[in-house]
Image 1 (cartoon, rainbow over the protein chains, first blue to last red):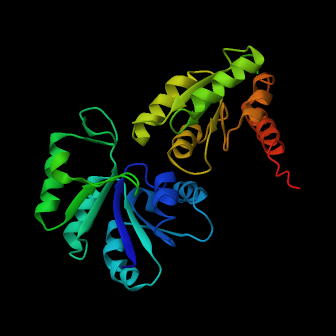
Image 2: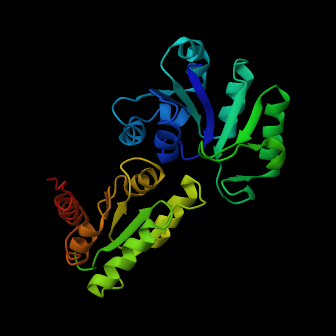
Length: 157
Length: 126
């Protein structure tokens, strides 16, 4: 399993990802799937700052991720695939049937969302979106750090 | 710069609040720094939180880690502005330096604070 984690986290690359998950998974590559960041050199520099040198960071659009996913899966180096929003996650799950598990690591408060669990806030529409992804055969759990118990989708959406 | 600089300390959990309290306890200065936690907010909400704390005047934004949500939100706020500067790896020594040099422009104050913070880090081994 060279892609150890598919994660939705609106903070993208941050301590929980790099240290919390990266260390125990021996992660050597972070794939950040985000069309906006892919188009912004300075944002990529910003996200690279928090990543140790032994960890490769790859910035890709959704289209590029779909094309390159089989290669990363075949690569012996362990990777985390990171998405910042549910649109991106839905697109990737829809277009890549090999994505069978989705970790919701953090979708935080903003206007219109209500708290489902401490680190997951959703509108009703977003909750329905997650249930749709699950209906397509993807097992979705919420888990901010590996030491926490995974929370099944039914408990937050 | 006539208006004294404000320092905004941005951190995970309660680190910022504790650092600001420690500076107050050591110096007696209570209006030079404000604390912002990233607890429970997405990057847009954190940016709004930092912007509200910084107000309209010149400010230096001190963040805990080189990388992560605090840094990205702070840099986005400071991007292209000369009245904002960002310093990473906040520690008590750099904040103590900063609160006594709030008459500098943000870039100079940020550099001075970063140097003081760096000098404070040493490994003393036998």
